[in-house]
Image 1 (cartoon, each protein chain N blue to C red):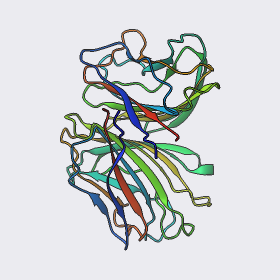
Image 2: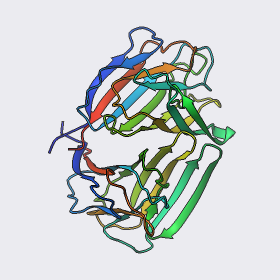
Image 3: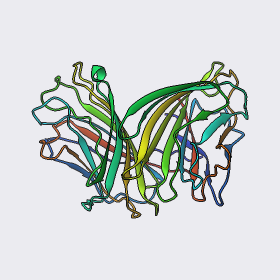
Image 4: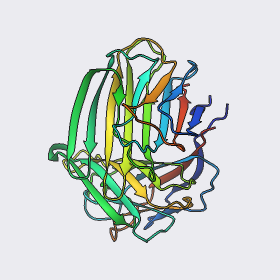
Length: 175
Length: 165
């Protein structure tokens, strides 16, 4: 029986970068998994987003519903429609505890199919501080076009990812 | 290193179906994972999952759910099945993943379920921890729904096996 969960591409930053893009994603697989561990140059600690855009699409057809836990700040749900990205509310900036990184996994089933594309995202920015978050997102890219690129960036205008941030894209076959 | 994360079986619904079943599951792996990408025109409550055709009240679950406005948690005990959030659109699939730990072990079975449904203006995100109070190895998994619930054609369900070593 075939083994799956194959590394398609990786990017471990040797210097800071404003964004990371996986492009020319082949349609060889059934599902995609993106796993990342990143920290930003933004001067704050937490409280901003990590953004995911599909196919460089800026026609406001990304949306998401999210559930975010703020520790003693409780749990909040929010929804964003007609956006240019899907974004969990987790991000470790330069103001957060040293050596702490945001860790996120995104799962995209049937990314090459002919229906709207859905995504599940789970992320954390734990940093041994009161300002830490855990986020779960149901994302939607309302396009029937196959996903061939994924771009990741810090919340708009909020600096870059630091050197050492890592990004891995895996493909999963169902047969 | 031994291979892991292997596709065991996949089902693509050809015509609307009330149930999806994986049976004859071997004990070759440590954990199981099911990825269900589903649409349903029946707009009823979410899919139910049962193991080994057990319809007794051996299931319980605790949910954490966000609907875009409020975050809630609820619990169901001594139930006849585990049940995740609903599937209610035919154009946009819902993604449900089920991680089933130590499915051949001699202790009760834990299931972590992630349910993602955003419809650009409605939808929910939900995580669930489920328990099947049985010491039997899981050899079959059945997805179904209440009443007239059906999985639409095009729904896919894939069962993966994960080995610890």
